[in-house]
Amino acid sequence: MKGRSAIRGCSGKKKKVSGLMSLPDDVFVDCLAQLSRLDLVALSMVSRRHRYLAGSRKLWSMRYRMDRVEPYVYVFMHMYPDPNPRWFVFHPVQRRLKRIHPSLCPAAPLEGSCFVRTESGIYTIGGLVDGKPTSEVTFLDCIDHTVHRVAPMKMARSGASACFIEDGENKKIYVFGGCWDAADSSSNWVEVYDIDTETWELLSVSIPKMPLKIKEIMVIDEKHVYTVDEDGEIFFFLTSECKFWTAGEKESDPENKNDWRLFDQTFFCRGVGGRILWRSLSYLDWKEVKGLEELQQKHIITICGFSVERMAIFWSQGPAYQTLELCFAEISLNVRWEGEELEVWGNIEWSGAVFSDSSCTAFNLLYAHSLYV
Image (cartoon, rainbow, N blue to C red; front, side):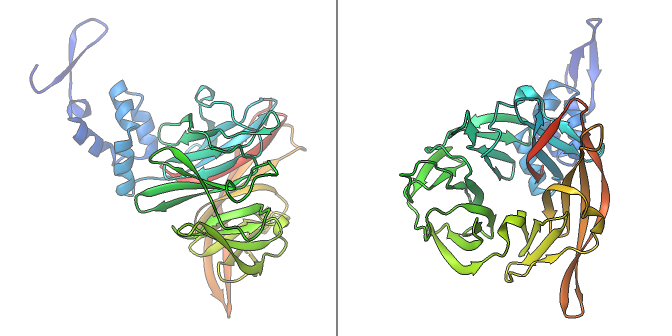
């Protein structure tokens, strides 16, 4: 048949097919790039060809360049008595956490891992296996929702900190600390993973304080990383010179400030009593985000931001409830001047339970972050 595709039905007779399936792959992908992520998921169920093209890197790169990607929240959670943690994705229409198929998720450490978000997925690095640090690393591909192992680190690590740096064409992951051997020094305290070559390299780094246990880490730009250690001391890591230098300043009450996020020169974090705090990069004084008083009695587990105008939080319901529930809230943020004071106001756009399981006795949310895919 010329100019048309043909398939055989159950009767064995040929049926004429027109529309998308008759288009060349390049034109087909260009059409798919206009669709939402949810439409692509539905379309992938039509045929093997649709599924292949809907999950292709070429399509994702095109949608990324066209700014057609959308924010999805990914959650890594351990649900007891299940022995292994699992990955979930937040469905934006149904407003539920959907489990990524367990057969796609190799076993991962339950504690001590650090996580790094890149433009297309999330790395789980190190952690404890049978009570000992591991060098293993896995990658959650958020485009096709598969999890696979990548090259292991040169050093076994648990309790490390890590960040993703993109400098032009160079995409690297820096991992700091987490070595348990007392003989470890600055010669193996840092290693870097080159995503393109899939290789690890140990770096000799100038460190002003040993041991340096990083509590919070944020990337300011492609050359500067902002860190706060467990004592509240503030350090900068210079990627161009592979060295730390101290700012000579200390963060107040670091043990009660968690889940730091940096958006457009503004820090946000989770404080005590269900409070969300903020401060600018230039000043150390934290303020409370106003308008969120109803959250102050919630047991907030983590915050995961989208931008300086929007964030999300998770909290748990229980144990007074018969069924353990994980709740979620989307919050819009508004920065405005009040007299001579700059204030941030939050407004809860939506909130509710997004996951419940009557067979689950407890859960531990290990990681949550948004990703544009």
